[in-house]
Image (cartoon, rainbow, N blue to C red; front, side):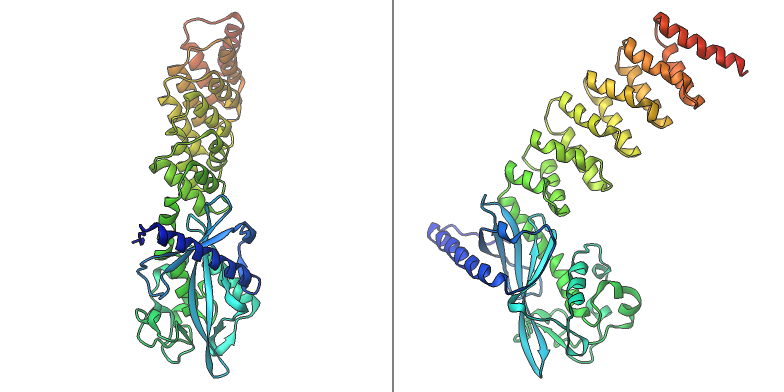
Length: 407
């Protein structure tokens, strides 16, 4: 549950604290060990504001930090985790910051003051370990989701503790968790999902990235939702932001604007099923004029996959009318389409359109198609019409003559 603050004086103090925090954060950033996606631009952050959350997880720190851009929209979030590493017979605290986008996409992590992480045998991470950890945390479909910590670790000797001073974070893992070797299960099943010799830190961080913080961040982002923020999310380089924008367009109180259309069209032609389907949903329920919706659907029709084409044709069949542009594009695309799509287009035209000579001639061109099923569909359609212009009658007779010759 988010903490609510009603006192204006308290809020002003909170903002001032956020500005002070950002100054410190800004000063430390260059001295940190940073591993971020290339799309993350630190210079876009103008201020940082803390937000206290009651998290249902094992991390003692209940504060999320909101990074705002100059336009006052959330740009990123981060949460601080304290990890102790063992070196020279002593434990040293390492402050690790995990970052998310406004829609919950993992952006990267930063280790304060150029600290280090260690793995089995108190061996410091090398550069490839840090890079590998970043890639592992950027995998929402990791097999780690299906494992308990006891499946991954051995309890023989302590090499790493979360919040080593109080050990509060490890209470739900096991009291005084002792981890060093990766178990047989890890070696055979999930070795590709952990940093070698650092199963615990990989596991804890991954479940933090995709745990309660993930949902809390999206709830905070909802507080700032507006058409402009939605547009930012829709054009974000992070796919979780795109999903989040589409979810709010389809389930929230915001309408699709013309500024959204180019991105929705781009999503419809991607390989991502969720982006495709939710973009079509957003477009169809947008409240925009039918002519504009049909224009967008026709802009992507030729580049769409088979199932999407079928869905577009089903949508067109429910429209109150088919625009001239829609009819023109559909008939222009016919020679390059598959038999089922051609059949659906012809059925659509037959039930919804009073054809002019241009449409008839485009269909008549299919009479010469090498695929006899396509030619027969065109012939059946033309034969169903009440009358034929002279040029059309000639094409039909030519087709019928060819059929007679092949009998």
